[in-house]
Amino acid sequence: MKALVVESKGVTRLREIGDPLPGREEVKVRVKRAALCYRDLLQLRGFYPRMKYPVILGHEVVGQVVEVGEGVKSLEPGDVVVSMTFIPDWSCDRCRAGEENSCPNSRLYAQEVDGFFAEEAIIKESTAVKVPEGVSLEGAVVVPCVVGMILGGLRRVGLKGGERVLVTGAGGGVGVHAIQVAKALGAWVAAATGSQEKERYLSGLADRVVVGESFSEEVRRSGEVDVVVEAVGSPTLQESLKSLRNGGRVLLVGNVEPSSPFQLRIGYVILKNLKLIGHVGSTKADLIQGLHMVKEGKVKPIVQRTVGLGEVLEALNYMGAWKGVGKVLVSF
Image (cartoon, rainbow, N blue to C red; front, side):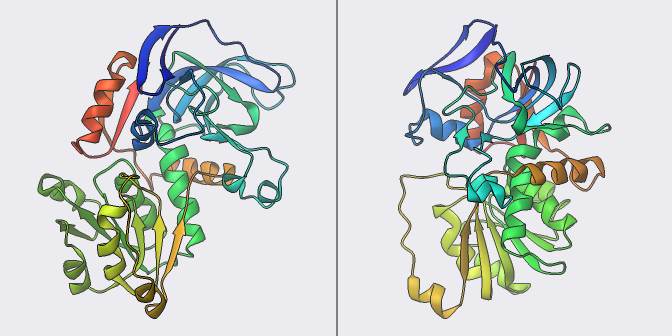
């Protein structure tokens, strides 16, 4: 079968590999859709030191089970599933508390175990979630790394109905879905984007759209916000902090420039009584809730482009240039 393999740092090839075989408590799926993520670019640039080579890239997937390994009880051939983006140990204190995305012993798909930019893939039974009837392949694949992750993050910052939320990088694959999740939870939402071309599209999703690098003053004209979903990182974080009310919260989910330091004014954070929370990944409960939100039409998948497996590297470069609104998907 064909797979996109990262052979070593900076060396990635689409090549034929042997068909995978499911081990104990694993299933083999025929990949139907995968999704591109900015994390893929960062991995290729060497920002994930725990990467094992060679490894198949891609951590967002929806597929159909074609074979089950020994000990599998909850899945059978024909089931359509998504997967968590990592494999928890399910035995640590964090996992037992339902916070498996904080598991210290987790292994990431596409980093320490093979990912999903391949015609077939292996998924642990424990990380698979069945896709409900009525949820499209496109709707399913945006849940594990985006919808479920934002749901879990907004739960951690204690978002309440009626609060005001700002989403940065609002035209990206995370941002456009974060707007919808926050709206579905009862929030008023402002969208910040650096692209004038994306303003019109985003105005159909958010209550307010602000354009440009210095957006805090414009945001405050309609009232300071309670929560910022920071999907960009260091380039926008200062403006995000200035957009918050006293006692506001920042949910940090993106960092597009890991090599760029950010100078945090600690006194500012203290005197405004701000809270900064980093967040990564979706728990299994987040995935289940996210899939139901898609099924109920509260969140709709926004796809800017669909490519074949042979076009993934080109599409990653396209995505890195900040073109288009929404997710880039791989169709098989």
